[in-house]
Image 1 (cartoon, rainbow, N blue to C red):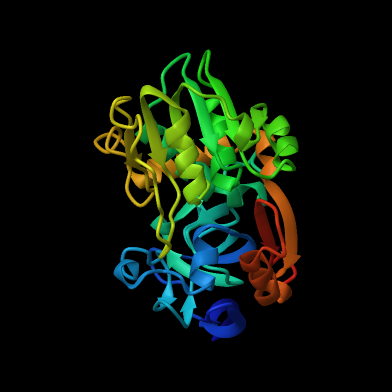
Image 2 (spheres, rainbow, N blue to C red; image 1 turned 60 degrees about the vertical axis):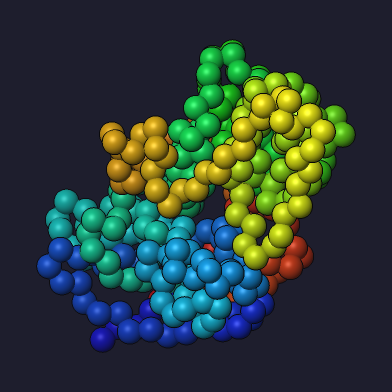
Length: 326
């Protein structure tokens, strides 16, 4: 039996590479050789740091997770590879799979989504972020001409902003504490503002900052009867929020958005597979390359994940290169 290499979280802030048996593909299955994986700075950082609250241990399981929270656990969901065995119509195809960091794997054929031929494989690791952004906008339902603020210029926030800018007449501003994110926003074709310069009276404010300050800014800058969509996941952290003052008189709405299920407005007509296919098609837009801010070899993955989790390795989407794995 062949062997693959997989990344495991062994304990909070400590990971390792393990060898794992790779079975042959059976009927209805495909064998995939990984080209690239991506690190989700939000959820994966919380997992790697051991900060998934016990109440969410079952709900936050990844589709092909092994082990249990808090550790040891094999976790991840941004994987792009090449189908080496399986049905003739997909062999040789580049596919996106919600699979952890592993050099090769066997999954049911319906678990993979074919990447369009004109989408570069490394860019395709962003499919998870763009799919999340699609769901956020389905939840938020922005209108033509809306004044939209996205708080947090991370991978999800930037993806939301890039998609929202396509709404006719929309005024889209991204707010972040890091002035270095202005260059990324320029490449994405959206305006950037520091928190103290954030515009007010916004019809829609989408918080992706994963910070209490970001959510408070969203509340403070929304228009009368405006809507705040909270797209961050805070893990086990408490989130203080000031809801006095004019919160009630302004009749503000705060709602959550989460990618685990299709947004209610589209649930009757779209499956999660439809949503992922849409996201992969949207990645034909080469502006999304602005979100690919670093890469490392699979050999360095334990150290890379630790550096991302502690903030020593800043950026947006950091990709892991598996192409030279034997």
